Image (cartoon, rainbow, N blue to C red; front, side, top):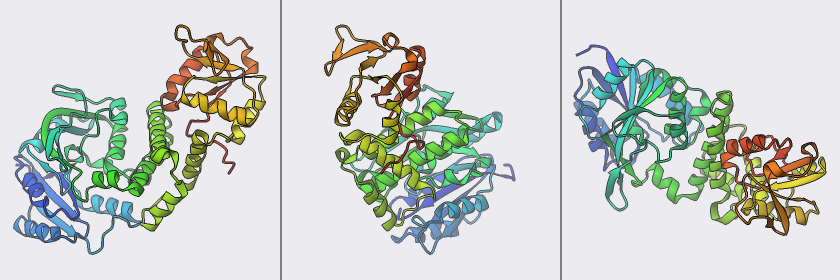
Length: 430
């Protein structure tokens, strides 16, 4: 056995009395030819979890190192800094693995398999694997299968961003220690596993194995997933944090993954403003978050203002932003792109604000499609007006913004604006 510590396992726990023994036993059963250490961060549990952690630390002093907090740090404004300082100080192995107090591993060779691959592939920044999802509400269990794969593969950036089949559980992560040195905005996000994946994406390949080696407890009592689902304030904070993070990540990477970032930004914005059929009072949710001591970054209100503008754009039939009005006034001909719900919203807002428009345009007309709301429908490439004199207002959900822009470029559209796009460059006129 190597005398160098190769893996540090980070186990964060809070009120996991019914699960923590299972978690620790699963880590202790690992069969490896290298040294590993379990580092436990107990965030001031109140249900007896701390006593169990102390018991294990006393029984296995060479393997387990435990820090029992006297005061819970979850809502602390300094939580990100506390977590970062703790991890950098105590996680000293070449590789970092994770197993939160309510999850557990089921394969005794999990660490050995992951480390062997990482040692042989220096271009790999992180290794993930398949896991069983245990639903604590109905006691069902099934494989998560986050990536379509029969054995192993490197995961694409699209798969990492979009999480089409859900997220890979944190208990499947093993990455190089250097990834702990991430910028503060990664640490300040409302969710750590997704941001860590996107950081790893910048520093190498992310490898995945379909071998099931751990169990993720979904919706366990007091768990993150359960809280987000049942607590509207927490759900707001969660999606807002991800929205803010994706915007900053896009800038941080110099727009390397702009297409996927844009999709996620629009997705999170939609989830926030469409809650409760558009009756969400955003300022009230921010106030509730602050009352519950959730922390926001210093520039958060710019993001909030854009959410409020976007919500008015979708739900207020009398609303026209300064930006949209000024844009339409520059051009002789105004065309609405799309014939769906967002296009109808624009048509109503234009009518209520006495803005004339000439018709609708679509990428490709369906057979027999020629009139919508008593206006002509053209294909984008067939708009009969001079391109220099014409403005196209996008009345389509911009979740596929890159595809929309490509269609506009192919049709040689010069002037366009999408009022439904979440964009901090929009004017705030309220």
